[in-house]
Image (cartoon, rainbow, N blue to C red):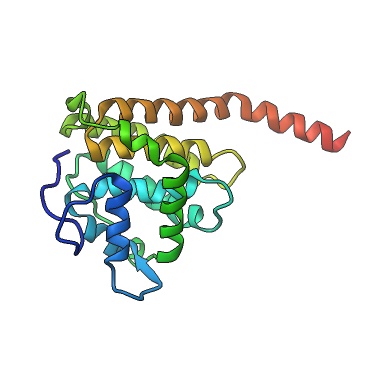
Length: 213
């Protein structure tokens, strides 16, 4: 995926770090507006929209005690990952998803909480293993990300937080062209989904036995 050289948002300078880029887009959107549509968010992020949008949408799924937002963002995450796998260079969202609104204050709060608890990760992210974030690598990453994004879509306990963390880390890798972050994010997300697939039925049976007993 090509690195964006254009300025994001209205600030006239390129902010450092993925969280700062997202924050600038949100703060530069129609001063005083309480909501932002997914279409406006995608358009403002331009060439890095896949990575930035996936990160922005994965953050509410990664943090505990964030309600409603995960249910709003799960389906767009699946669509974005699928389009990456298909080789698109920029996102296309159906009109119904483009019109979906998200609360600006809620998103800014998620960004602030992420910076407080996980912002230190950005200090260790830098371009490396560049082929993994190139065109071919991005297609493979997109195909693999479909799996944890589908997990987030499932409205059951334990299906969204860890996969959300993995998708968020992989998205940072896409934005900063860090192949190591991409690999780490994929390992976290896919390992948890595999664990759920193997251990989930056993856990359900155990809970049923406890309830019936």
